[in-house]
Length: 111
Length: 101
Length: 135
Image (cartoon, rainbow over the protein chains, first blue to last red):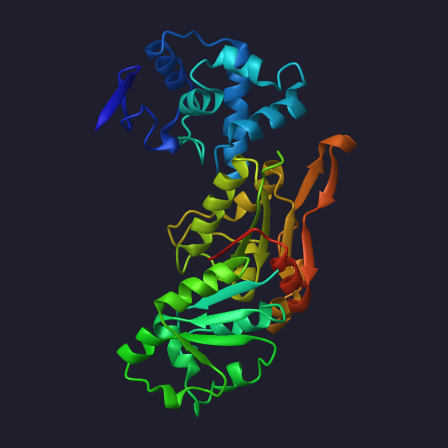
């Protein structure tokens, strides 16, 4: 089982780097995961990560990219609810990468 | 539009055939396969499920009744026996297939 | 998309006792992510899937009932409940979740997704589908 180290604590992740137990998530995990991808998290990233965590809390699923884009547009405005903006923040795919940092499973329907 | 419905469970065990008959539109075809063929026998206390569904055509898969020791003479009147080739023909002659679970 | 097909998912099983209800929901979400026209029908024990107030904490199974509320986000807004199945179980629409979708073209106006229909009406709706999957 793979694991990542965050502040001296070990967290189990699957072979693609997704957190095994989403209840163990702490914000610092996102920072460490981003560093492994050579990315730096800004407030704009956190807006999306927090949104995903709230979405999961409410609906018990990680949304598909299309759904995420539309929902972000509704909540944060059209200038953010488009794939260009989201892919610039998360070049590995807003669904996959942002969900990973948020400690969520890979979105249903994501291959 | 015509639909071929398949049911593979006995009406004595599950309510699948009842749901299918209730929700199939007039003129539809119902093919009983696997354990679904038990529902095609006459003289049972659930034979009426098929006997009362006058708007539908019923078929059973021959190899499945044979495998279970059910003679064709025990089938409810009007039910047609088809072989695997007949199964394919029914699939082709209908617009779509709904496999009830 | 002009080549979108009409998919109907018929749900006939109660949640938790078997895996069918959850499997169906997963397939629905995957199918909807590919821009197909998706409808759902809840008949027989399938109507129990939408009961309000489900709490699975003590049985140790994931409670997926909140996920039905996400269907609107996936553009799944044609959800049919068979009247006869509800009545046979002594249920009314008030016992079920209130599912809605938001119409982006009308400033996100909330609209009902659920329609209660008779067996005969449902049979007609099934006739209009390209692909029907039963769970």
